[in-house]
Image (cartoon, rainbow, N blue to C red; front, side, top):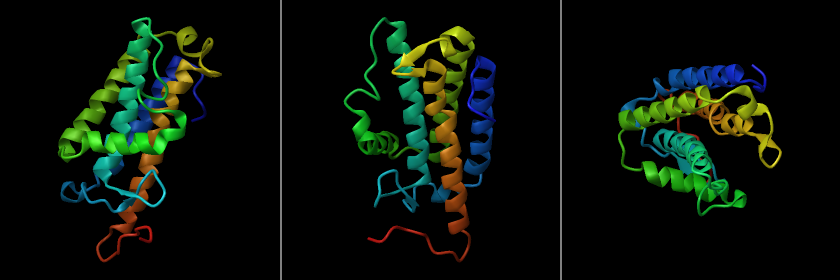
Length: 178
């Protein structure tokens, strides 16, 4: 599916991306979910599948924050309070830390809840609110939601697929040199 330009398209890409992601998440053994054997979002770092889900939750909650701030008549901090666009690696680490120590089922439940809240908010908007005008810089609100929901779902799915192939019985983890 291409880049969404309508509410229906946006809801479809979020749903499709999330369903595909969930198929890969279901393949992650819960006892291995906290193992930091996956390349992190910052070069030279590692993360676990749990960290990856924490990252997704973090971005979904950031979208929810943006919308709540807008609804309250305030200008949201972009990309997130305390972080600039040149600090996305640090923001990723912040998202990992927020999810640290939580169980795999808790993280999956929180991701589902955050995605459902985004869907609920999108359902309450019309095409004009989502795509009728720039919302942040040159990007529409719908595009910003897509950048931080369905796009990261697709990236995470690819990361998980690669990790699962590497973690097959007898396969050595593919860690960065260190």
